[in-house]
Amino acid sequence: MILKIRVFAIIFVALGALPFPAFAQTADIALVNGKVLTVDASFSTRGAVAVRGERILSVGDDSRIKQFIDSQTKVIDLQGKTIIPGLIDNHVHFIRHALRWEHEARIDGVTSRSKALSIISAKAKSLKRGEWLLIIGGWSPGQFRDKPGLFTKAELDRAAPDNPVFIQQSYRFMILNSLALEKAGIDENFEAPRGWRIARNESGTPSGVIYGRRAIFRFWRRELPGITDDKTISGLKKLMADFNRAGVTSVFELGGGGVRDATYELIRRRLADNDGLTLRIFHTPRFRVRTPERNKRVIERIRNSRPDKSASMMGNIALGEHMYAPLHDSAFRPSRFPDEAYAEFAKVSEAAADGGWTIHEHAFRDTTITRYLDIFEKINQRKDITKLRWSIHHADFISRRNIERVRALGMTLALHSKMTILGSALRRRLGERALSLPPLRTVQNSGVIWGLGTDAGVVAPYPPMLSLWWAVTGMDLGGERALSQAETVSRKQALIAHTRSNAYLFFKEKELGSIEKGKLADLVVLDRDYMTIPEDQIRDIKPLLTMVGGKIVFRAGI
Image (cartoon, rainbow, N blue to C red; front, side, top):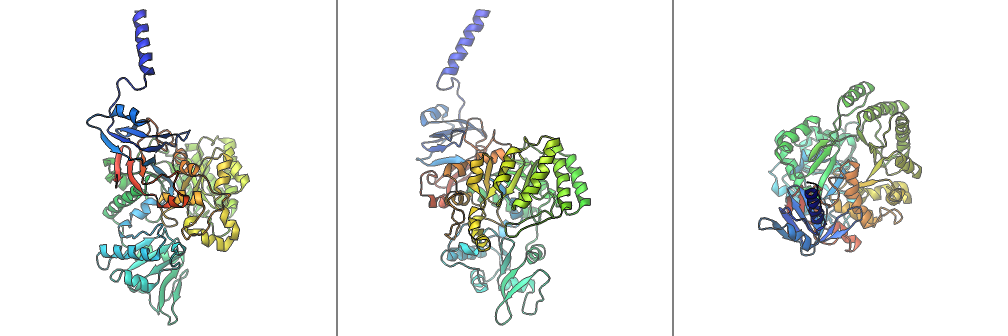
């Protein structure tokens, strides 16, 4: 009996030593004859990938992958094209845009004014007469290299003569065409409510430009197309398709106007539970807390719930972005908040620590970050939070001292590419100091794990190739410098930040973020080689194929 066991042991050892498995599984899809940037720990390059079901079966050269191919395998000849892991956006207000995405004409990354107007015109032709045409953020008047500046009412009237047009730029102002002004009852006799500033022509008639957050939010509530369950689902399908087309396979969704817990439940019921999602949507619970009394109820809710850390396609995984809403700072102005507000934030943070929740909290200013870290360090003395991977999002003004404090707490940073369109505005206010915001290379050199994201879609454009381009070149869409050469990072570092590091931020590094055997098959085929093309062409890279969990969700040209 002992002899038989030894014989079988020798056979199994010998089989394990073979270059290929003796009883190889068959691949459902094989991508061959390419360049695979695995983004593994060694940033190794391979030539082909085999996929079975939702996972990567093998990564290697063509001769290895051929061992997994039979007559049932779908073989895709990459013809030398580059594959990267699916891109992960660590900060996007995703569902908010789904609510009205069918009405939107997106001009993210468009650097020609005439092309932007053509996109608006084409969208108008696709809508019914009288339907609203929207652009809810993701652009800046400085991005048009041929003719910078705001759209005029006359331009919008020509582009969309039969549709009211609402164009929002961040939360600073909106632009309306004549039909939109008429529909909203805004004329020369209109008395602007508090918080509005209406730009007028010499004759006193509204020019179409209206400044103020209150004005924007009133339009959202009173004028823009209503939100229904069917429109939400239909818009989400189109939104996911656009993100897939841009190479995005996972997002961290932080809610926003019109999004409620019920919205997530609707999506889960109508799509996630029926295999209807084409990208992974990780999100926060929705609550907006402005008073200590309301904070008590939220803390109770946190104490009675747990993060869904096993979520694969959709799940409530962390708290943020504004756990206590009065603490909402900005990159554009210094922010000072009362001690009472920080005390309420501390209570929520303590509940998060006790419940094993990860925190992903908004903070631009170093003064805000300092107070948060004071709270986190105090909590850490009572309960170890270093394994929870708490994160500061944005962190534009973070100091070297606070970066070190972040590292000591095992925290992460989520840094964003909004400077592709907002860099010029910050330069006007801060001068040369704006060129160090956020300090990408300083954070990279510190050893803190950081992820790259967008803060789309009101504040910034959503295509991740723009994020990668900005992080590597330091340029903005208008052709000006938005980040100093001292703070740019390498192509390799930027790609790691948009894939593997973002997976780490969400405890998904064993499943996502790199192309390795056993991981979920989220990958993107590019139309050119990210690692070798001229830096300025990174923004123009187009995905040819996007795969999520072994399913091809976008394919064009390959």
